[in-house]
Image 1 (cartoon, rainbow, N blue to C red):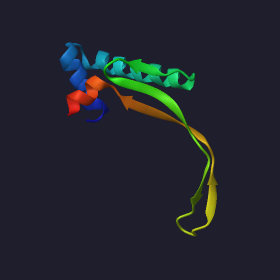
Image 2: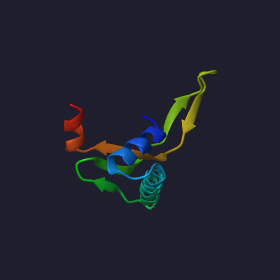
Image 3: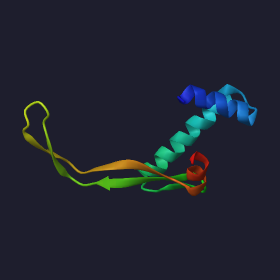
Image 4: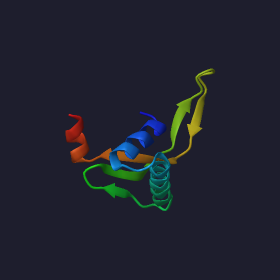
Length: 90
């Protein structure tokens, strides 16, 4: 399912226009992004938790030359599924 299909599903489920569903989805994505940028985590009980994790610096290899390169530490977004979501999928 891509973003436009998700907007269609939200609009049908909530009985709202596709434009309103698109704005709602964009607002949710924007809010989660801003919270993660601020160092917060977003917990949606039963659905899951969005958070930021630290990835340590490490040594990698250039695939063309085999030469070792340093990959710097980075912050990465993470999602951990909640129990209700896991149960729904299984």
